[in-house]
Length: 303
Image (cartoon, rainbow, N blue to C red; front, side):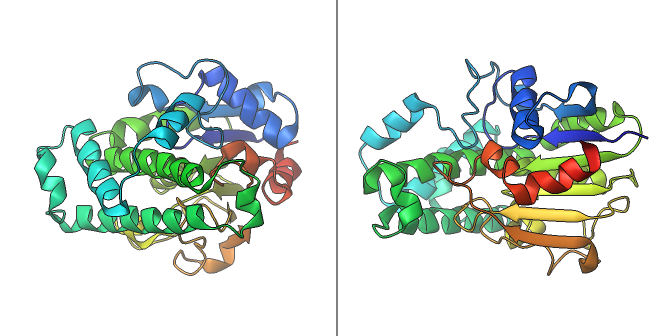
């Protein structure tokens, strides 16, 4: 029976669903895949209007206007940045915590754990932005302040969407979108999850024994302890998954821990690979999908 690829997108607003699926198809296969691919398109649950044009502003290609604002804004210390992101995450998720509560340690152990991930992303991003010797970073034609702004845009979007998924009431509606995308595919499926989409896909696949010859995660935070603390335990490869390939760029702030093999059992079904993602923030979905380590195993099964 023919396999279907099911994509689960990650953080940030997206272009219209048909355009985003076409971008991912082209990155993996070099052509539209028609009925052989499907997209779990959950962005409208968080964003009322899709991005104009065909630019995936939440992945590797940062929209010009937010980046320009970030670059030209008055720089703030990392700790102040963390405080503001926490406050915005509370507000976006209709959290009962008032703005000033973000100036104190998170009140619950779960939120405190996620705050730790935010701080680690922020300080790692500051270090990367300050680097003057990293040739890969120098590809980005921006001074130190501009590079730091790129990472801060990524950090803010990643944390706010992940916070909304776990604490803001968006988790179940987003999972339902993914369940429907999987249900619409007959037979076995190859599931590809980017960024937060990898967490969503994992959560949904853990619910069933759907036949998944290959599960691919890219730029995934599933290796991060603070994210693992929010998942079903024990940490296991979903029952129907025959093989799990996890790929990331070592400079990707969302995937601070680049490995899943040490924690998810059985480990012989998992494989961690490092790839080069030269998008501005090293997190771009299309750059991940077009890397040979990601696209070739998918093509071997589907193309």
